[in-house]
Length: 284
Image (cartoon, rainbow, N blue to C red; front, side):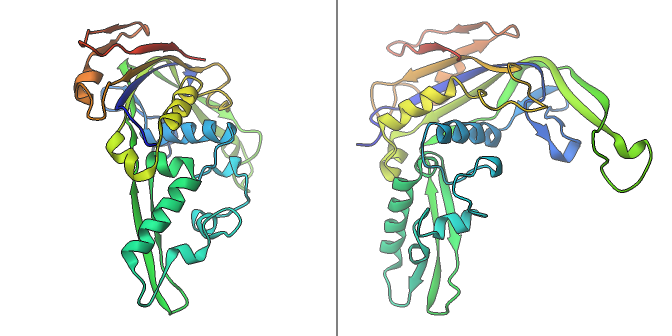
C-alpha cells in the first residue's frame, strides 16, 4: 500500500567550524548569498539521505563514487545491467511495440528495485543502438521533495591558506604547494520537506518507506566526516515531523512550514495548528 497520509518535515542543522556545502565554481567556499545567508543545496541533502539509506541496506540507484557497491561506472550501466539493474531490454522499444505500456512496465520495475527512484524520482533517457527500434525516455516524479537548507542568520566564513601535502602540478616552488581551506565558524540552518501521497501512488512509496526516511534524517551527517566536515562539526539538532490525518493534508505545506520559527541559537517556536501536532525528535 502506498503512503496513506501527507507528511511535512523540517530539519534544524547545526554547523560548527565546517564547510557544509562547498561551491566548486567559487573555490569551494561555503555557499552563501550576497547577504551571507548560508545554503546547503537540496541535491547535497538528498545525497546524504541516499548514503545513509544505502548504509542501512537499501538498494540505491544514484550511488556516490566512493560508496559504490556494484562496480558500475555509470548510471546507464547500472540501469542496463542484468545483475544490478533491469537489463538493456527494459530501455529499448522494438518496432511495433506499445511504447506507453513498456514505459509503465519499466517505471514500475525501477520503482520496485531502487529505493531512491520511488522516493525522489528519476529520468531515464536511453537510445537504441541496434537499429531495430527506438530508445525510451522515462520521467518518474517522486513523492518526496526537500528544499535547500538556509541559515537563519548571516554566517561568518573564515578562509585560511594551507600547505598541501602533495604539489598540485609539476612546477617546483612554494606556490605549487599552497591552497585554501574555508569554513563556516558557526551557523544554524533549516531545511523543509514534504511527502505527497498522490505521487506516492504512482511509485509505490509506502508508509514503511516514509519511516525509513524519518529514521535516517536524524543521523544525516553520521559517517559523513571529511577534512571539510570533521566528525561532530555538523549535526541534526531537531527533526520536526508533521503527519496529517488524510492524503490531501489538513493544511498546505507552506502554512505548515511557516508555523516553525527557528532562532539563531538553534531554539525554535511552533505556532499551533488545530488538529496537527508535530513530533519533535532529537538528532542522533
